[in-house]
Picture (cartoon, rainbow over the protein chains, first blue to last red):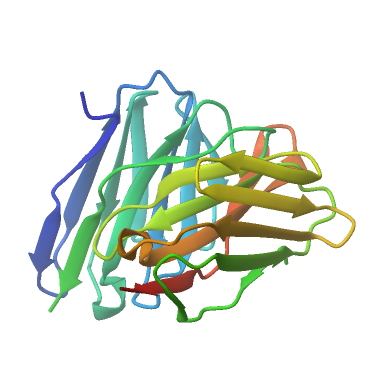
Length: 116
Length: 114
């Protein structure tokens, strides 16, 4: 009965490759996110989708492309991977967008991406 | 640029003591404040939320909010070694329409010594 699940848990790949991370939530939430946590543990938002519509697109290289086929799923595709992309990527969901009152995030378990 | 500031620590307290974690934020319009706990190698886990000035208690945890000073804190009473983790403060920022964000501080690493 996992609430927010993402796969894979670990991803080791070489520079220049293309990879995808999948995320699914069964909480019935309207909004999903991708966050990146760097080696210093700083959590930074990358994208947010509300009911399949992109509402937040932070300054992220266009090698990163999110896709939300429905409001329970949000995938992240990364082209031409670079060393600096190594980080932990968290998927998260919230009932409504987090800018609103009383809308905490629920995180998936994370995907540790290592680019060699 | 909206910001959330936390002392990165590490904060070291003996078992049984009170751990006090602090956070300041820059956006006066923020209305929702959250504390997340993150164990090493794990995902952030929501432990407290607070929306109005004053104190909110939940078990050994007390969140305190002072909107005038733009300050939110988390007190952990009777600290246990299992409380050793990084604590992330998160604050909502609303831009209008459906635009908004939860801004995280860089976290305070807490170590509780037996």
